[in-house]
Image (cartoon, rainbow, N blue to C red):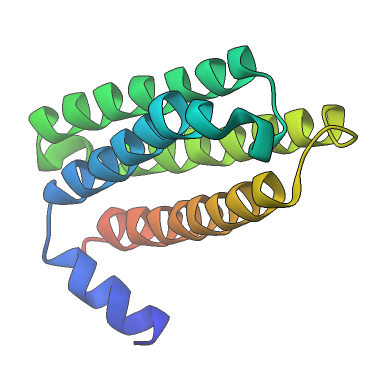
Length: 137
């Protein structure tokens, strides 16, 4: 599916796009806060770092829900905010990965690389979608 096809489809979702983003954020939070701590030795990040990272998507999910409840009037602005927050989360994660690079295990590199690719891709789509909503079409 092409990027334009995804954007066209996402335009029909309206504010439900925030609920989809919130679901992804909650999956990240559960992975970081509940699943990865069970295999912390194979990930290579300290458990308190995983818990700290897990809090961020919880806050993002709450903002997603707030944005959903605000309705279409603020969709463009809130999509830009969520995209920006997702981008900042990625920068923060990259900083932690660099800081812990000596202890990070292969599974940790794989997990966080995939997460970064997904979240950065999502942030890009959200910025593009915000621009389409701002133009009214």
